Length: 307
Image (cartoon, rainbow, N blue to C red; front, side, top):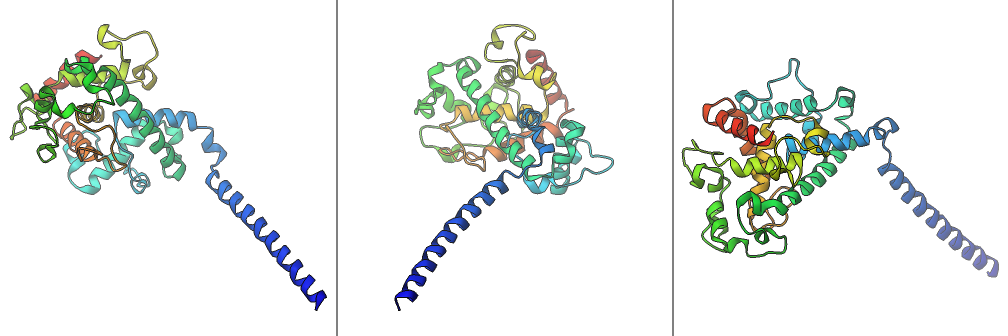
């Protein structure tokens, strides 16, 4: 009996030892699995990170679904700036993936369908977006000709400032129901137009914002291209894109709003404004109206001011 008791105790010790080994092996396997990125892809991480930040400003404010990134680009590819881009949901998705490939260097195209590419784009896009919005927040007083302290991250009474209420079309604190995807600040003379014929007519704040994004916080006080390193030089950007124009307005409205953050789905944490849906709507308008006289005039004025 004593011998059987000793053998049983030894088996228990062995089982505990095996259990600990299995936990260690399992943990290492998970760790290796999460880091199992092909070396040929990892060597391009710096280049992909730079692309992701550029893409997140000039093309898409929020990362595309992985499903869309796996779509093949048609041959011939569809026009990126065309009304037909939004003729259907499938056309819109093909336009999105076509635009991504058009901005990405050819030698990186084969990595687009990978989960590592998706993860890197999401991480860098979100980081870049936060960084650029931070620059605009610091300069918002100059952009809107208001007291800079109104835009401090810790200032919680933005929705009580009459000038900001007018720009957002609100009547007072907590009036979430009156917040619109197309607030007055977008329109000529900051007067909402039901016909949308003057949308984006209030172009001066947008031009200032884009100049700050492209050339830095001090660029409003100098003319032309500054000598210092800047996004415009790094990304090779010399004119505005529909995505950049849409990005600028969504960022400015976010800064005007009571929000200091939004959800992963792009919804304002406090205002519940649907920022992701607003970006999509604004970009669609810029794309589909790109050559319309009203929009063409606005684009030319912005380009002259920015570049």
